[in-house]
Image 1: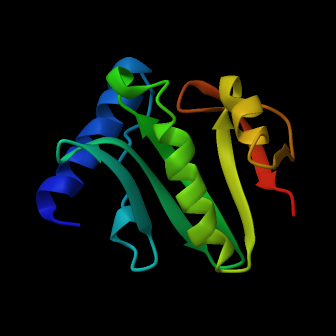
Image 2: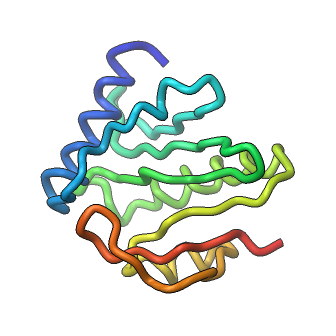
Length: 134
């Protein structure tokens, strides 16, 4: 990933999380700097329109920061990115978790994720913990 693509991915995340969704916490947390972090993105005309990240937290994998630009939603970009993320994450042979925004619980459920705890507030948005059932 070149610097321009990284910048555009991070800008997209900020636009969605901090702008559109008005998250109460900054998006950037330094985890992109970890050597095991993987960023997945989808591009249209050479510019990212969706992105997510995969974190290796020793005993499990965390998929997060999943966003698709509002002009490109409904085109299955998120589904294709998550399919790729699961392919990459499953290779690690570890538990795969995520914190889903509550309105996306059923969407993640379609991939095999199951709810593993109560709803909670994260950055001012209702979330639910989920783990991939295998």
